[in-house]
Length: 236
Image (cartoon, rainbow, N blue to C red; front, side, top):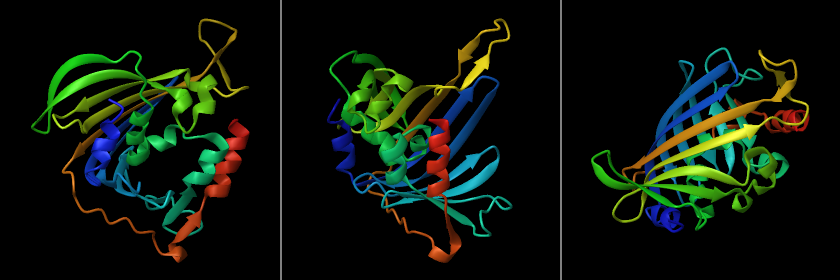
């Protein structure tokens, strides 16, 4: 199981389909996407649909670029960028990293020997796979210092083909509220912690596909890294 990511990355590139379901008390959101990813370098090109709006996304050299829907451009420029490396240093990979298929796939490298269960078989895109339910040791992840928020283990489903490559991955992430972020239950006057649940399902197909991930022209990009870091400080 721990070698699944390496065996998949040996294919260098893949087409991906992505679904991210985010839910919190009183609200939910689903994002769908498809594109291609360089599993070795981590670059990717995705087209995301969120609440009926299309977002073009690229990850190039650990920098996230997004072309926002018309009317939502920042600073009069169509693209925004966020330096994922700087954000990870401050607050670790959170639910935003779920839309980065290479980062998501790499979680398999943190699989432990505990709680590995064979669940059965399934056909995905015409390929026979074996389904495993595993627990990822959060301490082994890049954001392992966030164990107080996500718990000691992260449940994950992995579907492997006969060559041991990942064909589907499902991650169920539950984030506890940051200190001071509370809500009141409708049946109890005492405050209760708020939880954000994120389910990410990623399908990998067409290994060896071409990936062209280029940064947009600098004149068309607004750097939102500083604002993202500032928001992270307020939330944390």
